[in-house]
Image (cartoon, rainbow over all chains, first blue to last red; front, side, top):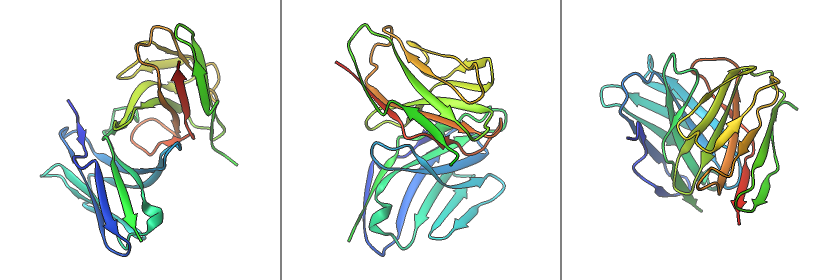
Length: 113
Length: 113
């Protein structure tokens, strides 16, 4: 059973607009969440993270929101740029998991000029 | 520059052959991981190692083997027992146990002919 779910396999957004990528999780033990960005045939690169003691973390154009009661997090990219086109993976872990991350299946973002 | 180096980037193998994928890091990280990615799938954990001479099975360890003789190196052997070995393999590391971001290598694509 998937513990981390990204229900939208793809998302298309116009350049300059906001991109919102969603992620749901089932395990209430998760206390640390991360977003990774991946280009084809490359390794994922870390984008932004959030601890469960926060509900928002911002880094430049990227903001992650965490709603613990709904077991939901989202990544906002604003403004979106064509270079943001990639697959975005949501990942989660919990203290005592020895650093193992549980990944969602990813959402492919396409930003059109 | 510090980082994680995976080799080879592309590898072809005949059925019934074992193949070893190399992963080397110079980040002085304690923990190292092997993930597998299939099209439309998230990253699934094969094996991980928190310390030299110790490693643990992940979610899909069957048909794979690893060793951790040096802190810097964590090679993965895909054996002939692996039923569906064609995939993109990613090695990662992190500085310490517990929750935290993983740093990934560029990946190795294995194709079984």
